[in-house]
Length: 364
Image 1 (spheres, rainbow, N blue to C red):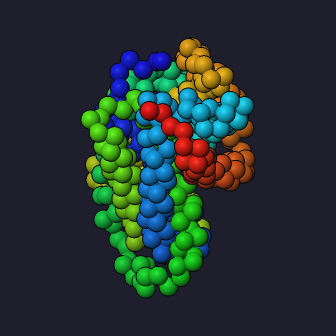
Image 2: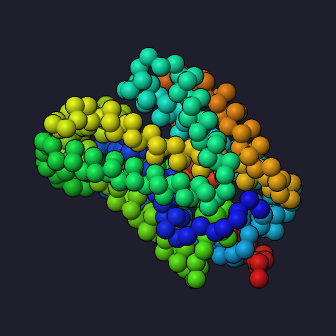
């Protein structure tokens, strides 16, 4: 194994939070307001509740095999042939998630900050940095992520300050007029935004805790904070935008930051996007790491050369990402990614848990 030491609960919380947030902070609640309108903040909170339910499912699955990670015990649940297929699919999903974040935020950077910098350069530097970090051990990655948490808190403060601008509380009223059906329908795209907690499927045996329930508590704290953060962003955006503006503004948070006047910084949006780049990089390198670990156990026995796997996956992501400069390609890729996310992080763990319970097989 490449793990010299286990990660702490605090490191787990940082990893989950920064893997979850990603690029979605810039788009919330654009996708979540398609049906629920200015009630989208409720859909965002419901998405966090659904994510918590899936976390419980993942925890119940992991606790049955406390000393093994998913790519190892998956063979005990479904057998070797299907286990190989599932490990390949999980590795492909993690690589695809890394690619999705990579091209989406590169698009933001190229449109708002580095207008004349070639797409090749931006995506190349991001892949290089992410692959370099992902080729390390889980403990090293967790330590780096803890440091980046400082950047996240700075961005959190910027969002909080920008939310104090002019707005209208009437945008929230009357609450619930779009109906519970519309709110629930928009809770699904909100649920996609919380992806990242599936990290537990692999990291469970490498978390240092006196009681296994502490891991569940830590995961719940991380998801609860992300839910609060997304809810805060959604409320700030709804406070500043009318319903018609919500339906036509893909990056509402950027416009709020651009309009906010701060004597110290002239262009708050550019400052935020530049700092947030480090936060989105966490999601890229965590998924690169996970993809390599799933791929390492495809045959049932661990492939020892972890850095080689990471760099191989990173090169593939880089090559495919070169097509990401086409905005239409990103939108189509995003639709596919959302479907894959629902299947991989919710359906697959649920089915595996049910099969494991029915078979009654678990690690002692």
